[in-house]
Length: 288
Image 1 (cartoon, rainbow, N blue to C red):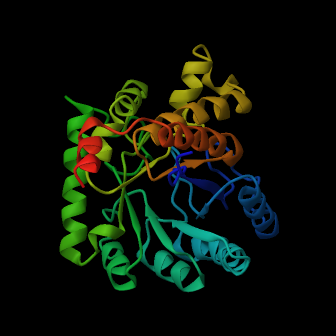
Image 2 (cartoon, rainbow, N blue to C red):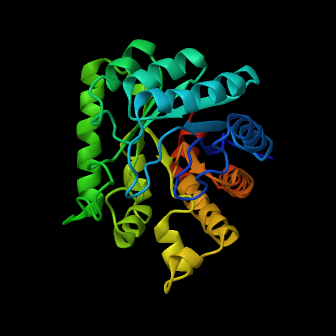
């Protein structure tokens, strides 16, 4: 039997906030957040993405002190328990202190545009950094939604952020790209990006796909009133997207429900392990 290749990783969402779009308030208490982080690991998460500031549309930014107060105790406890932690932040100081507290990855939804010091922190720490496609804060409705070709434009803008990161000193192997589903994009844009994930994998950097429970999924499931879409149904839809992302070669998927997406990604890896080798590889093996 063929060896099952390394599967797409599962990044579990842990929002230590009162106002995140899906689970705001559930894990705002540090003790509850730590318990939930451990549960995410038991459910199949490989990485816990800890965030102390909501990035939902219309969210008002919290100050740096409050963001640090929210995330640092949670990161310390989960890191001490052996968890791999990413810090979901747009602030360089928060990223730096989170790394000191035990985080291993920086997940910046602004790709260093919100805080110009962020890429320098990633470079000095030699830490992996997620560069997400971003066109500004979502405190204004429908901010920067116009695209003539959403896939081409998002890829071009990600290439610019990659170039800036490399110029700042971030190692190419430490760059992870995220097309930014739901950020300054409408439902049609999001579906177009998902239909073209292979193009993002071709950027030659690890790919993170973060679709979990986002409004475009809710709109598909409950077109008349997206707010009525059931959480379980959104997680089922997310698991399907996770499988599609895994098939496209994604390094990780960021999800609220690790269990369903972990199963989906294992299935994709098992199928890939049993796929016949391309003819070119067969010829090389025969003449080796």
